[in-house]
Length: 138
Image 1 (tube, rainbow, N blue to C red):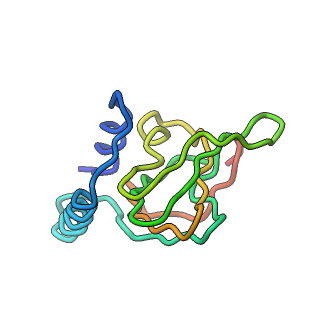
Image 2 (cartoon, rainbow, N blue to C red):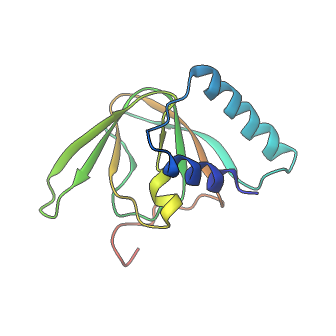
């Protein structure tokens, strides 16, 4: 069972954007950790920290992880063909990012940039790899 796959498909199918409570964050963190330890899922779950200005997700890269923001704020930007960035949204604690690419099997459709120090619970269906780059050659 891949928790990442189920979560991303569920989130992508919702009519409105999901935002959990802090209780939800605590319970999902505990569930993910314990179910991985007990062998009930094969996801790789880790906590990631991203400094202000860091690209948590880069538009065009392969979708390999789902992120649940635990603390801090992030901004969502889409890059136009000329390279200019257009702010689309803000993301706060208890919100997921990265679900669309995973659920649809497509490259990332936006940049997620840490506005301040951001801590995320990172779900990956396989062992995380180094940066894969952008574009079709990645």
